[in-house]
Length: 304
Image 1: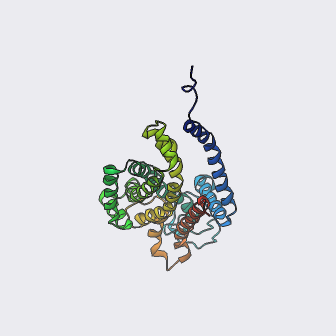
Image 2: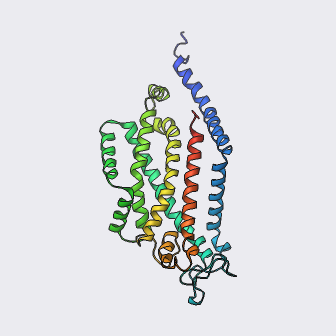
Image 3: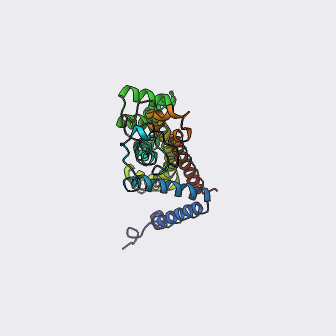
């Protein structure tokens, strides 16, 4: 009796070897990424700053010396270094250090949440458009192009203004702003991956589209999409703070860095250093997210 039916073909044997080697290549790649990140002092320093800020705002209830809502007109606009008020007080006599710590919670939440939601939605739509192609690609990408017709700041203000002031409405507006660019990136990288040899081999082996996308495509496209999404966090924080500054985001008396800039603008001639503290927090956080994103992008560039 012939053993042809029970003997695996050369193509099947090659696929089996590739499947066994894939985890090793993946592990080696990410180990190389981590090694390159550790050698970048700027990325490590910025990541450490972000980690310290995150720990500070998470444990604000333990670190903060005062109630963020309790004020006194007798103590209003105390200068930096006042005993008991290290960073002074605001226009209503509330401790600035406490307000900055609690304000970081809302600022980070409003900066990261829209990007996270846009990352999930944009990745799904972008991968679908890139892998399916044809009319599906055209429908998704043409709708995306409509959003590109408007500047991101104007679009965020218009959507938030139409929905009304509030944290959730601001998050929804920012999510809609960030979905189109993530779709564009996801579609581009997916289009470049779908015709590679290992994807063709998976099709030839009889794998369905969902399995190919889940096993072979996502692993190769999530990295670039994630790095691009991290670069949007700084933009999201600035836009969220801008919406709160304009009265379209957080409402008083909630502490939020953009809203604090708005309420302290009248004190800039009396206590300018106190008035700029929320802006410094926004700037430091945004630049650190940008530099960490750049470091990750360079570390993931296998050509570098």
